[in-house]
Length: 463
Image (tube, rainbow, N blue to C red):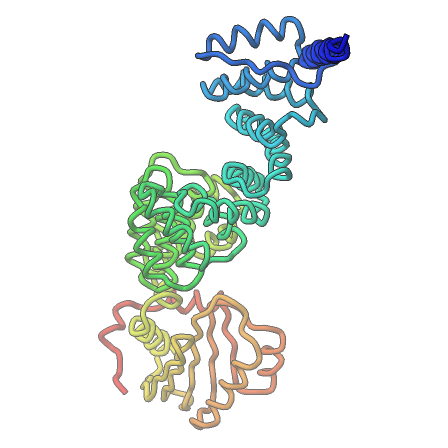
């Protein structure tokens, strides 16, 4: 009788254990059928995992453990389309499930989408993953890349800085961080990142090109020239590199080097039309500086056939076509100062037909104009005349005429003639109304140039 209580307790405990095991067994059933978490799939290889996962999905298409297993296998095998579908279904089926690894699921969903070029889905997944875990390298790098592609450069910089802290030797992080910093005009920091990226990947020509742009922007032109010159032969970047190199040389007044750069750029068989036109436009400018007017006009004609109103091409053509057909006008407007002075002497000596003309003084103002003082003697009168010959095709204002009038008085000249390749403003014309100054605009200059007798060269009278 003393053993009866003990037996009763033992029987009671056994019943409790059996009931507990039954409850736990039911608790491990498939999701959607009353259970919280299905039995994990354990197998030796991918094929066994796929068979077991597909068997369970046939019973319950939203089984999170089976979907996660499929996603793991497909992600590891880089079957991005299947991986994307598995994680997409998993995230929908297990939304709110505390047992779901929300970070890993969204990260792999985003990266799979990115591999498939589905950028919107990739961005969505990676943003959620970043919200769960902000310090993950892969998430930050790929978000930075996506923001860069969307031209959201400030956001790209934020994520790429985080990625760079987590992996300082990742070349692509440095690359996109450098390019993003360049886009927001942070040239010095961009240059630092791009240098490190190129050190890790020396064949990254686009980053070399961006380094050249950075050097150019911060005024280190020699370093920029070195990089652009190196890239001139590159099939993809060569035309743009030649355009940059030529432009820098053009600004430095190294016109022959600029011509060589632009001509090399035009040798590439495949050039974007906007780059092609700009190279031709700047090559025309370089040719004009080298007095190669015929070549410049030819290029301007080609530009006009592609883009009829490109920049000031119509005005340039109107101007230089005339120059191309009139050598004297070329010399007057464009040639070296010595040639210009020789031409001005010819104009002075032929200005008064059958008169005796002696040039007594010549002065030049910054290659903008020449003042020539001459003693003129005809059968009816004699006087001292001052000529001002202005090298311009624009509008000459009153200030130039005031200066000319003061010069006439200083030299005690009796008469002044002001000649230009352009026109005079209304104020300039009013200023000379009551003064002994005659104004001669382009049409009259053309008459003087056309009447110059080239044989007169031997008749020039020295001062």
